[in-house]
Length: 194
Image: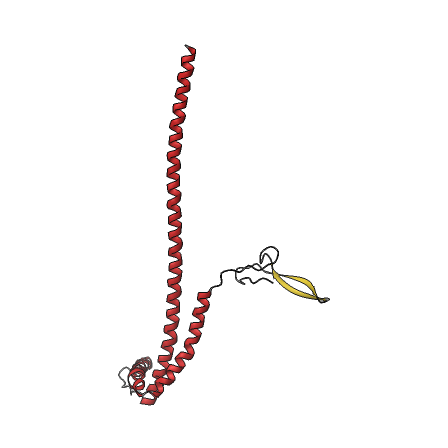
């Protein structure tokens, strides 16, 4: 059975085969695979697979960093605490305004809750950053592929234009030679008539 993209392949076509004396119903896509039924190795999107692997590995990495941030006093005080307090302040200010209390004072989080919230924010920022980096790298790869293809097309176009110009010169040369031959033939025919 051939491996075919399910989005762009033709619909499945059931067929019956005999295996070991038993009739088995299998499915094969119409027009799938090369003639003769042999598989052809195509271009597998390795870059996309690597990006997916990096994103999957970023989650456990983020969990380890969160655990380290919770345990380290420096991370608790300077890395996790301030973003957590800011997030808490913005969230509570927004909630209070929605409920109709615009001037309410907001108490800061205690150190333990701030460290927990900050570690969660740090973990989410790491996963988000890795995902954004993967998207950026994929975009850069696609842009370089597109640029390379455009350069190849432009060089091919320039080569074809040069060939057309050379052929135009050759046609002009042949046209001049043909006129010269016609002139000589007319001179010969007129001199032979005299």
